[in-house]
Length: 479
Image 1 (tube, one colour):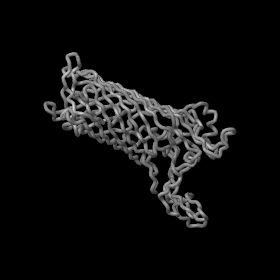
Image 2 (cartoon, helix red, strand yellow):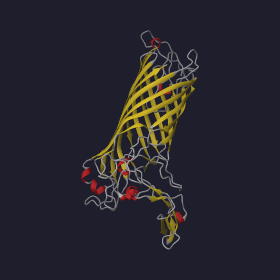
Image 3 (cartoon, one colour):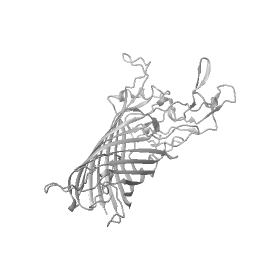
Image 4 (cartoon, one colour):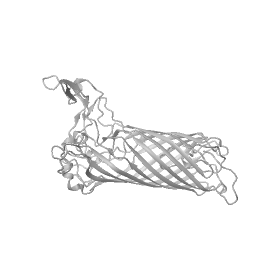
């Protein structure tokens, strides 16, 4: 947005927000000892522009660095008899499996290009410098993991401790448009309202399940079909669309804001989320994300004549993650497993039996669906608190430093249904049939993504006590 001076901002974290109240002119009179007020909007609603008065073109170039630490507890349901505690006749979900840890270092480069008044092109390219993951002991879990992690053949699903290989590279490139429909700088009677749409396009090699310390004779990143080694990959392998709507309103030294955003992902065919796409009506989309945030920017210091400004930003954000197929904390451990219960492919379809025997059998002409490590996750919510400080040192340079802490609700990470109930054709039912009052009943068609050893009640894995801590710094040059 165009204003007196050349104040611009580009955010490192994707947020969307709102504000209401009485119209106020930011240039209201102040005493000689008070800082001079400027009229720029909150950083979250600031949009570079072009063809504005004597400033025909605006360009922001930014570079930043972020460090993220994630920790979570992995647990599993069990039907194992526990003398004095449980008989094995019901399903307790208290078995400790592992402590998950992840560290990600990211370099962010980008640009904001003014197109017209309050209309900007936004470009981002996050480069992952290092991503390391591991599973460690959780309150003595290693002592009992051998029993808790066996499949029906006695083979281990995975072992703890477990380490993933270090990954680096580019996940995606992003391009979007931000438009300030209303701008308090131009019309003090209205709050600033910014809408935007962003597209993210997978760029790096897709993620593949890997074990940094595989058993002898096993590849680090084994192909599910051939067992040959592959590149570990870095990209989620999805194309994404993100839409947002943000409102803010300046009152003297403070500017509250709020807004919403939504994200939808569409997996590529060569990703672990999209490979071996069954021909049946199976829902395999990644989770949809919907977020709302409330925040407040405080501006304790502004000097219009020197183009200087200091601001502090505080906000709360809540996000809903719908059920969907995704890369969980166990993606590498389960996806690289050599247990027969996970390595054996499932038929994509069933057909009527032409011979004597079961009325529905695996279709020999159907695709065989291999397990890639991607699993069906349960819906959950995540909540974050963030704080950031921004210092504009002059007309052409700005610095931002910030942090955030996020908590995610406990949820199942292996929860694929065994049958697709939307299909009622008896010929396609396979094992998804039973009897009711002596009559055969079709429960649907087998889900080829389902694996009994991890998806049946009593065998499912869950994640809880998840916390993520983020720190970031950003430098912005404004032309």
